[in-house]
Image (cartoon, rainbow, N blue to C red; front, side, top):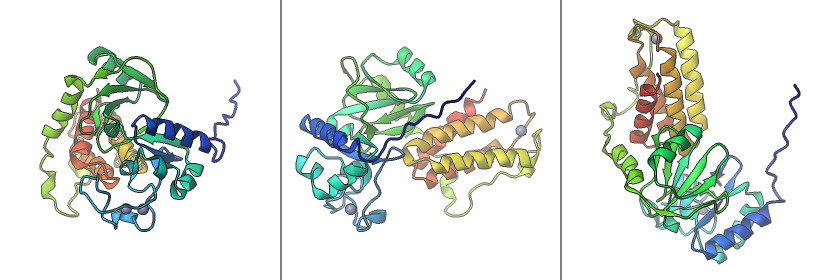
Length: 300
Ligand SMILES: [Zn+2]
Ligand SMILES: [Zn+2]
Ligand SMILES: [Zn+2]
């Protein structure tokens, strides 16, 4: 069998005018938009706003005075203002944009981001039908109404609404339904989950997996370490929005390796290392902890 090379390069120029045209059309309908660079993440902050030294924008969780004309601060830069969208600072960025995103909360919407076929099957069974938009491996389900955003509320499921962005992949199909309690409940449960104990460690005391805590493990230290390091690298490579889901997948994969061990295998310590990796790329700790706990319990 031959393996034809796939030439799917989202190039720099051919799409740039298209993105701005779409952005203006969406803005005109009250949908705040922002450009994304390659890797589907927002453009980095300008030097003045780097590391939020400017204090951040007024619409952020900790409101700041920033009025920077560049598309800084990720989702918080999303706007419906046509003058901003066509300003010199933004036009430069549109030219290098790989794709377009919007701020669902700002448009009065919640996006249930279903990452894979399993997540889609779950949604079909548990959520009311609404407008759907196809994504690379899954679907966005759009509901009318806003809530706070949360990653990895279930395997392969993120909720994107307030203070968050979602890729614009077209208008989708179907009529939009009101945001159901079934979706709100996913995030409520997450909020109610308190970080277990680990908050006490105020510095450097992160648990590290060691063969000495895995007295009932069938594997060699080298085997466990190699798998763990590979998983930690995967989590660290992801942006904040994808790292929670990745942490879930890594936890599930690693726990699965020990399914036939009599135990203990020191999975708690493995879990702590995955949580730390996710937190290091800005996943809020309660979310990271919940994603990892879910991953461990879905290993079977
Ligand atoms: Zn800036
Ligand atoms: Zn700023
Ligand atoms: Zn084991």
